[in-house]
Image (tube, rainbow, N blue to C red; front, side):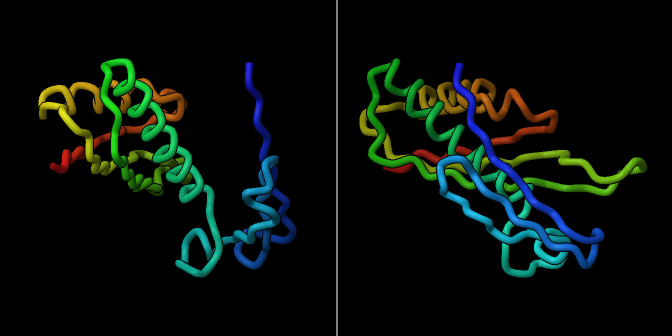
Length: 142
């Protein structure tokens, strides 16, 4: 079993308060976040952006693993995750994640590419974690 940690510190009320996010690895160390970075497009991070980064990275690694199982080695895999946060009756919820992936993979057919990409979309651990509609646009470059 693997366990990784991240932490958040918050001080103040929702709108004027400020927080920081840190990760065990040190990749993020006291990165600022707050209402303004989440809802007003101010500099800093926010939970949805971090979920998107995690999902894009997880999907890319899962796709690479599945390609390897079929004896394909990608030259490149580039994935963007767009996380949708919507207001609902009981507050806010992440309702969808759209993955947009472009890859260069020598020798693969379009059919094989799509099949493996969809397996990665369903099978990556972050996809399994999220209770949201997850869609995928996958483009094979030649």
